[in-house]
Length: 450
Image (tube, rainbow, N blue to C red; front, side):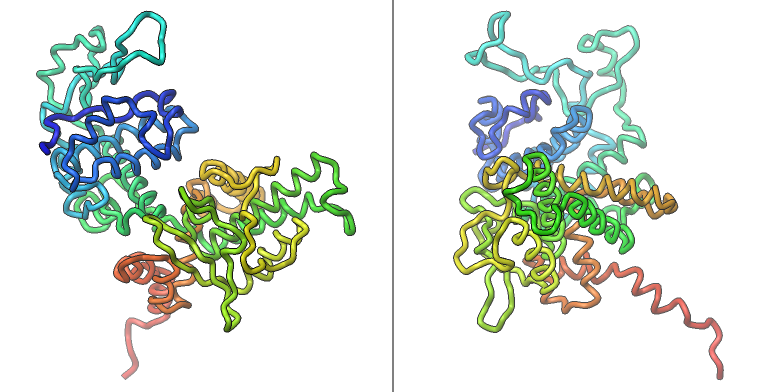
């Protein structure tokens, strides 16, 4: 099967994106499906598209952010398929460096004027479900800046100008594409971030991008987050002796809401979980019975990962006796899960089993936002506060693993993180223990007594 010859828009408008079926390609435009299926199977074009789509889904709450992230992640996927001829999830540092060079100087066939639409609708004046869509032939992945006084799609002089990205655009490429690979890692699709490797090892390191210190919270910031979640749950706890069923509807919902938030944050952090471990995957929904006590008295959380690959994660006692017991007790259940218990881990407030990944992200973000407010109210300096302002759900997994790395054997941490390669665990969590490294040298003298 021959590779398609030219770049093609893969995602349409913000509004249309929100109508897609994220379980399959049934709601994609036929032209997009045909384009993806035309690539050789070894490039895994459909899989790469679905991971990019999953990444963009995390940003569908804001149209401006969505458009920016769509631009850069779509370019990366198209470049991987058309230029590098490699699955996007198999890219490595050398590929990422080549992609950055490509973005700094794309070929003329990839650059064009700004266009109003990516796809042209074929049909009558009134939009109908039966309408078809074809690619706007003027669309290109990169755009020349518009010239004042020229029409958006009639700027012929643009063809004679050389494309040159701004410093801000280059920084955006690093940020967005780096975030894409972090998303892919967190969802179990790949194990390394080639964009992050560029920041550490190439001449791009200091030019445009700041080091985000592996997206981990400081101990102080984490204390504020978990303390905030506990405080918010405690504030809505009923008086002693009052059962859940005896509370009025509004009070009951608030208590359940905040107890659930505390459980979510403690669960994600305690076991280095990915979002899919908490909300499930097609064909698997996590239940209380997935927490199992082995014959020696150790708790394990059994999960199903990408490709229906089963795994088990060791569970710390403090989590079970404090957070699991609290969550179950407030629901009127026994403190510990029972063998074979089928009750889902999470429920919506109206009683429906399960929550979507977007719902969980929003719940966690709400706790982060309140923790940030508390830090500001307590007059912590901006250097302590700023990182929490950037934090997202994924940071809980990395923060917990970073905290635990000095205290756990590398092989044990690798197993619970479910990294296929120990090299990944070592590179991320054992070669970057800056505090430990700094403390080991801090009090050593320059001169030594003879």
